[in-house]
Image (cartoon, rainbow, N blue to C red; front, side, top):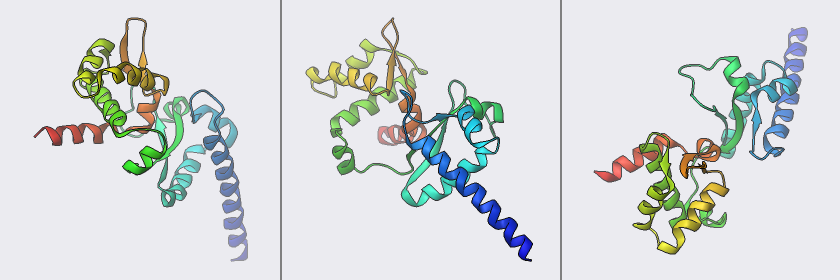
Length: 193
């Protein structure tokens, strides 16, 4: 009985140490983009890092935070393989939603957020790519004209949108990380009716 307790105690200490190191990797920004690639977690925590992240996610639930997995390119259908997880990026994000008051405290006006939602929704409706001119024309119907170019540049600078050399806009890493795209589409469709 005592041997079993000692084994459980060692296992708890083992995972507590790994969770602590995972938190250090996830919370402290070391690259241009926040978060950590799966292969970096595997190198630092070992091959059981997905289990460590699941345990950490359960602890973060009480703080309304979550460990989010962001796949670049095609999202896997079903349970992702270890190879797919190694190529993915892991970040800590909000589990719930920001209230309008919280959004204002982080420097976003409600019309800026509405413009971002419009731009993201439009790009999603165009299968992930739309011309900047088209997005700006759409935003001019909803926002003051002088603000449209400034806002689109801000969305690009903050990593929500990306622009290529042909002035095509795409969803960038931050949209994939922070925005619940299914919920956004459902919200847009429910207000259309």
